[in-house]
Image (cartoon, rainbow, N blue to C red; front, side, top):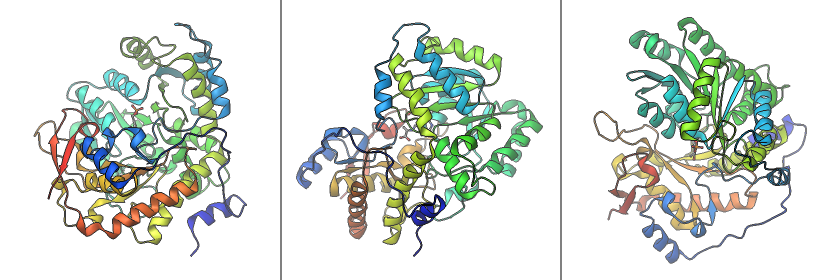
Length: 470
Ligand code: F0G
């Protein structure tokens, strides 16, 4: 079988890819006994967010803030200018973001949700409607807290794990236009576009889609705002799958994509290879004035926004590294390698494999468990019990409750995310992960599900507790 990885190798004129870095510093990790793991999971209320990192063998909870920094980034940390106002690192970062993403104005924040808070408060009024290509947990919550209601306008294919559409993150323009006609353009402050779409499996948006979206937004005078958290990864898929982009660099594609949008918010903890950081960037001077004013209320002065000077320096360097082609090829190649191992064993995953993670289809693992027995939460627990590999639920627990009815939201996707930190694990770690998932798959009929015993009010998946059903 001709694998996708091989295709990647051919495309770049080599037989295969390998990590474009070597290891200079190591951090030991430990393997525990099954009894020890059972005890840790009980203490954590069967929620992988509540495990101690020390009790985890291979940590695929998230790719957020978990990347390894390069020697250059660490060297940059020593150049931190920790002045309260006007740090030299701020100006370097501002220039870097303007050059790489192409927006006019820049505001730093401590991480993505800090930026989401500011943009939501600045643009959304009570009663507004915010259309987007599938919800993300923190993004939607900030839109709701600002008085808006989120409406999903992603293409239908995104809700079907088995559908192999190459751009499952695309907006359904007809759905969006119907919504505009239903509620009126004046109630839509902006379209919230994310590339790639995290909850759909790290699925990309095409250049053709963002162009058409721009034209539609222009017709109705609606802003188009981008969640740029994993846009560099999105651009790799454009180059791979969209006609006319084969010979462009990821950096060129990124700048072109952003040029169709009015601004962006960023969790720099992902693409940009840092452990903390975020930003907002816009082209509209009035919106910028408001953001730059609000940032001092919630984050810090507008020349640090919650980051230390050294963090801004590491972020400027990480941003440059994040759009290097050899980095992205290896990054996506590693995720794809894990996906292919599982696919070869007929283990149900979201297809095509996305940019940052492999998503297991928990409905197919445990068809005998109804959604209110939390199949994905159960699967994440079972994988930890098997091997100490930590993953994350992305199903009914993450979807939370409808603020109006108070009932669970029942998302069609009931998934477990195996998320790969950037530049952290080797191919042998990935082999261990795949073998563990396979062993859980082989025992799938034994699963009984979970019951929720504690539920916090906001973003419940972070802190909820469960116990096993017998
Ligand atoms: N937007 C997207 C698409 C995200 O994936 C995240 C975070 C945020 C915004 C918020 O950024 O964490 O810096 O405040 N995603 C993490 C994850 C938590 O594990 O997927 P943040």
